[in-house]
Length: 463
Ligand code: ATP
Ligand code: MN
Picture (tube, protein in one colour):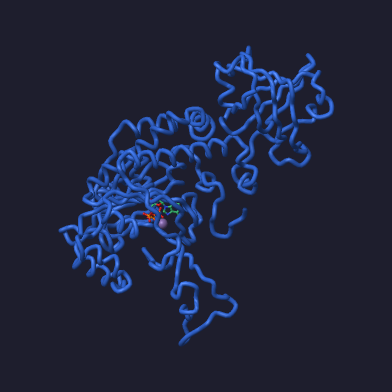
């Protein structure tokens, strides 16, 4: 007897096989004709397998008749062509082994549909629901697609550290890592004495692997990182997590347009793969979560992204006649409402904004000849807003050092970063894609907390 997953057993060509299926019961329906229907789900697909359990089975009265949502079983029997609609096959049970019942009085997933807010309090059970099963499969598909895209394109997967002493973009947003006893912190001259701490200096969880990726790009050409990053920003939004996964490619000999071309090709590959490889789950999201999401993705895959300098974006926004909560003016960062206006209303497709004012961007972005802007790019998509942030990096030692001084950063602590410009410097570029923002965009899930298994947000790190 062969062990089959539900997705395998549901295929028409499995009819006639004798098989063992294992999973969790979603529903049980008893028929007057002396048998019961069980819907069995094992996570291999959204759809379950219909099992027909005859009343003549020896444990029918004692166990099978007590099966309900959440119970776990092994079913052995014959896969047969099914006369019912919506399924090619069904499983006629010869044997049903019950591993664990789930008391219907207390099992929380009784109702067909619960709110996502409620399910967030059940992080240990929500993967058993249709929506969270589908999210998990799509998230897996996106990750596979990310690796495939880069591996097929000659990129090396590199692993930057998670604990770091460099505060890449400003210490305000970083989680500190320490073994000091917070109840009696050692002091020297009134300040915390970090020489007594584990790493001998203040250390943090990384907010980005970019600087380390640059080290590898400046030796190996094209590299990418893909791992967890941490931001202690206290923003309770539907698009921010304190712990999220980021993909950061970094390429030597890439200028900003090469960077944009790569990012656009990359996103289209991910969206295309999800549409073809997760067709069943995407049909579910289209029907239940966001109407038209598949068409939106197909449109994005088929069309060119808009490429728009920041300065022109400011003109469009100021002339739009739209009232924004925050005023738009050249030199200020665009707010989410501005970004969303551009991508959702004005262009109605993804927009790559580039050449931002240098005063609002980090020191490592390459300065343009105009003296006011840097070679930054953000990719904006409908509903989610910013999905990618990137730039061409400043490769000129003198300009970079000056920019660090402007931003009150100590070049001494970045000596290794400056060495990359001191010895064999090259033009190079890279970007960061937030994995969860990508999964949000493709599924249409409104809240980022519902596309990561265990969300970490201000005030909550349960499970
Ligand atoms: P935002 O303005 O939306 O806070 P950011 O400008 O801080 O984003 P970057 O520092 O450019 O973002 O990070 C690169 C990418 O990482 C973003 O484009 C986004 O996809 C993702 N990202 C950033 N912060 C978060 C977060 N707190 N939670 C989830 N994803 C994030
Ligand atoms: Mn941010």
